[in-house]
Image (tube, rainbow, N blue to C red; front, side, top):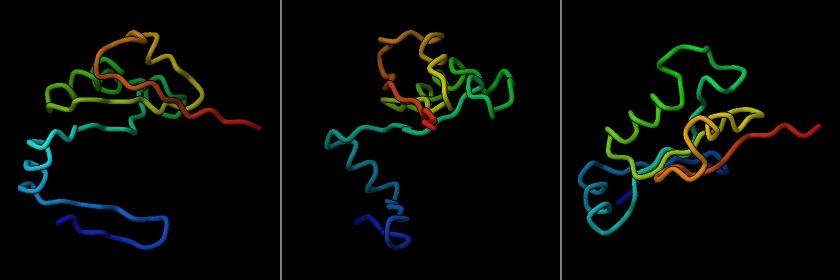
Length: 96
């Protein structure tokens, strides 16, 4: 069974590789829902931080979905394509 770590709103659930494998066989999906790319103002403009590099790496690791949570921009989606399979649209926008 999953093990809960932390308390209150700051919790993290971890599962063993055996449980993860069983969940995937039951139809669960693998995803990274919080990735910052070089499109974000506070991430270095290194090649390995480019959205395409992240997306290809996620697919190579057999992730079903990935989303970019860059700060105050949706440029990653402009670069990758807004309707690209396996890409979930998201952004962090500061409202003052």
